[in-house]
Image (cartoon, rainbow, N blue to C red):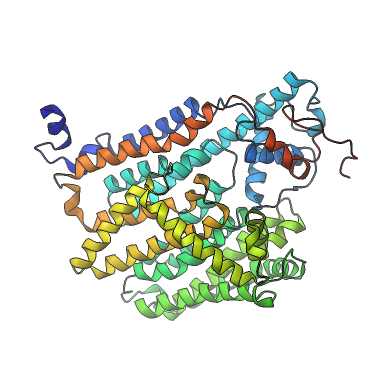
Length: 542
């Protein structure tokens, strides 16, 4: 007992430093190795049918594009993920790791060995792509957070919490659209926070424009991210700093820079505007909210520009820089939307331009009560009210357990909020509360689709950023006598809970035949999967 006590509460008060003894690069390298080991122990070797939803859906799209056909999966709509998957398959095919790129060369289901071999190759290749995306996300997250908080130890711990969050661990071994979207939006958020904290930077409008592109790409890949992006906009001004007199944006050179940004913005906005007009003119499965076509899209645009204007007024940003930032955002959003033209399909335009109608249609499929009153707004409010209770129960971890260790970080963040208020650190309080408000709001919306573990990858990074921000402003806790013990406990909880989901799937011994129900809609060019019963003979799609 004395040895354990000495380890957890060392006399030298090693604190946070004792948790990152490998240094910055060593800690990141160890994290990447740990992610790969976890992936190999539980994930890569799953049978190809183990997580059929969405592994087989995305693998099918990779084969579909490789066969020269158009994308026919539009739920998320997963546009960027499908592009990456098809390119990844082509790379693996050239390396001899996938035998075929086309649907026509896949053996028939009656040849179980040959059929399963091809799909195993495809799904495992897709899982490796997800692993690469996860590792890249962790490294970029760590680097940008270090730049934001200016403390490598805090950034290294935050990177660990992200790497071993339940959402990232599940998405790292599954062919889903969630992680790529979450990574793009989270990196965009970190760039915005860095820009907000860098009033002396001449390139700040460009940084904001890049962030706008990343956030738009996140929405293009998974339209559910629109809630996250919209909720983050009001939180950014809390992180600003007063702009001191700045030579560039108050000089004649600013006019030339403003003109250059305007030219780029208009050049990109014209074709992007055509896409938006086309999307608004396309029919949707349900009427638009409030019965006004394009109404909420205008409100989203107004929210973006209001956020820029509010930041400029509060923190005294020069007029030229403010206008340049607005134009950079227009250019960034337009560039993100124009990515739709890569492997263009009109249905992607309809989904991305009308996300609320699209998401409501799918949510109503899971919860028929959403259509009960005949009013989208009333239905949503009722379901969201229940979602608030569900979200609150999940925060206790007792009433609703899960493989989401970030919940325990939330407990510490809430304690930190109380401490910040009691010590009069009101600005830190509102900064962190703004981030956590986004987490709770987006999770509440996520309850409309059950808030599965894979979905929390959208909000877990924000909780980690909030915790890192608190620790960076209460540095005395880095050397507190309990810091090392609390850190060890959090590490243990993260490792244990984050592996619960992956390990659980190891013990599934047979394919879920109920997965066959969606094959007609999401893999129509496949006769059937080998684990599915024969389906009625029908003509293949044209």
